[in-house]
Length: 173
Figure 1 (tube, rainbow, N blue to C red):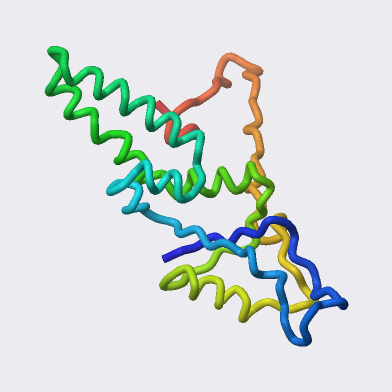
Figure 2: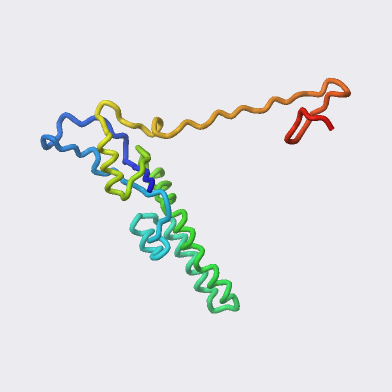
């Protein structure tokens, strides 16, 4: 499974005034977020949202749940039952992306993306390839966006010159 690792600020070289010899506390707050479905968000949505401190999403989830519960007593019973599972399904599919977005808004930086079996192995793999000489930064770990070039427009100059559209613009009629 793929994991993104997040840290509250840029991780630099080990400070010279560390409290204990050989101890490195720079990585105590590194957090690994899995890339995939959040099954606990489907099973216990309000508790999962509260555990990960996604208060805005919890408020929206509670409001949607209250609206759906109020519709149960009306003539829209079957529609309400069908729509009742949609918030949990959304959290199943997008829950971890909500966590990443919340971390980004809180000032956390994405420091690495790697593959591991679980969260602790992801952090262990990250620490294993860490060197003091070269600290990863969010700008260096993320791929650069592809360059986009605009197509050049060709103006028709004569009666036989025309703009062609389709799969084979150089073909004849």
